[in-house]
Length: 371
Ligand code: F6P
Image (cartoon, rainbow, N blue to C red; front, top):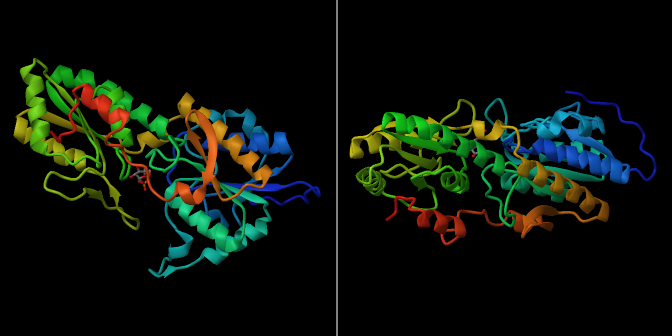
């Protein structure tokens, strides 16, 4: 952690802040690199990288560093994670204190922003982070541009977010590796993937990785239907099956399956094992379960995530240069555009039940366990 002394800026020199917030994912460093390159080379600005999202603004001394062009030339384009650090807890409007109290610490974060004396902030986050940072920006009167990142791909109004492609690549590769061992042992393999309340990772990786069954939270299923599909595959001579399930899918008896973490909020996790037991019972097949977990987040970014991250980073800096704030950059119809942040966080993006991917999966004979 560093808290560098600030030089006095030139009269026309702007200072930009950048932070990463929420769960990490592949491509965050590529965004940081692009923002630094554009801000310094394109406009001659200074860039402060704030550590651990809004946590760096809560701590005193403030936790940040001045980023320079060296980060454009070293390897961060290729690196998973975020060199700035991030957090997906500690909402400053409802901050959990060590003594158990929940306190509004937003004024301290805003004071931190004022101390940094920045002309604009680029927040790289998901919809939860955007809601918080936007509220801070409104309360503190500072200028904000958002860049969407999330492996879950659940941010409205952008076709894709930084990190999603990498997560799908990891899940697809997992199916590639599960298939030979499934076939060797006559097994039903269940792969549980992340995605929070959306099934985008399961749907995309399920199609790309040749799954026989895809279970997503948007499509209610019956385990008997899944078992019937596996039986049918067997009748046609198949000795194995691949099932991919999104973490938020309900258990056959109803209700989500959760993992509890000491001192933290629960996260989805465990539906794969529930299904594994249920399918073993109904089909008589041997089942094995793989929970992919954070491997989907920490992988080096794919070319596609690096590309989107780079285009988003440049566009976000250009927006600040034009004085356009309270906007989120987005990918729409093969173009980088920007939309009001309020619109982006209005409605999460769920799997489109009549969309091309669901139709493609059904056309391929993949079961969603619903018919
Ligand atoms: O939102 C990203 C995500 O990876 C979800 O897919 C998952 O449910 C959650 O974060 C896991 O959070 P944590 O990093 O706290 O385990």
